[in-house]
Image (cartoon, rainbow over all chains, first blue to last red; front, side, top):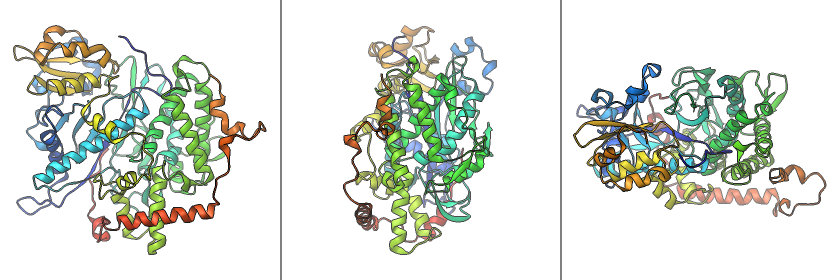
Length: 523
Length: 68
């Protein structure tokens, strides 16, 4: 396999976003249509309305073979054997619709929300690009439904303000050799402070907005534990789900569940860039992060989030008191120091992707320290806070006024006219890192430097008609020349890249042709 | 690769002479804030037409199932 592993703040990563969904639709009995059915409509509509080759039909299926909890029970032979139909989810039921897109993403119904899981990328900037592509995918689905006379609205947020929260999960590929307890210890104080630069902002304090106010993070009030396996109950700051979707003895997939869905480019960029940098420090210079353990992390997450002045301090295990800004600065200092150490895992610290992330991180921290309101072009919670605060000054509305709560929800509406973040972005008030052309390209095309390229390109080139039956993160199920299902596994996330498999795909016009050349070899 | 690319902020206070890109802001904070308020006002005017007219009902109706 040619090519080199990502260095510095680069690594294999991706973002999954569960979208909020509402509609005025009623069923035949006059009852509101359930969010499960609405979510199914959205996924089906994207596959139906998108240009040819943009997605597998929503009934095509997802290959769950690699997602069984019985990972250890599955042998290598099993992995390469024929796929059994029973392992594919055949989706006659629209409420479990799932589709694999030509950009390598998965667009599907996760319980009561449509979810866009971005393709695997290798840099924070690419993560922003394919995350924005997900907004366009969702929006295209809404428009197709509108043409069918079905009204649906989608919101890229994480709370309904009444107690329900739904996730935006980040995934990072981490070497299995890094001890998990070391990762967790480093991540807890960082994740407590990260909303200072990565929060989307929220009106209301407490899970059900019991108290009026504005806070930095959508998710802070829903964190109830330091470490744990759950994602829906007693949500932990560090999640221990270990489902690598990659060669298990080499990799761990770090699943970060505490982040906000963000619409400001720099916010998304810094959320992933800063975390990836911290992970690299843990890998190369873990001692640089010593001494940052918090006395009471769960309480600290809320203290940081509840203070838009950024002056609140949290207590460290050693008795010191630091602000969220202080904590992030300590992490950035460590990353800068490690980056120039000459360690090969950091690559050239001045170049993409590391230099721009660390410089931008420093700039934003300096701006926030000088005057938080000056960071409105970069930090989403600041932009939201500023707009709502000005509205409040003009109208006399307090933080308990429903007009501010409405604006908070409407901030996240994906509709370019109604969505306030989209309006600010269009008006140039949120700095852009990716242009509309790049986003449009990322809707249709996969990243070139991960296995998402193989997944996306077989969908785009061959599609269901050309024998692509289903996919998962590490497999594609294809129909061979005799009508049998064959699973092609791409276990390494940086396998199946354009530079390694483009010639192979170019030589064939359908899946059967491709399989004839593959025998049972992994790509 | 040197560390100075990341250390401009800290170095600039260390007496090596003024950095050209560390000049003070051209306008006073009060003027800046007034400017910002003006820009925010025009934005608020612009979005006024799309803001939910019945905020109470809209907020009340925004109910989601919990997710992950």
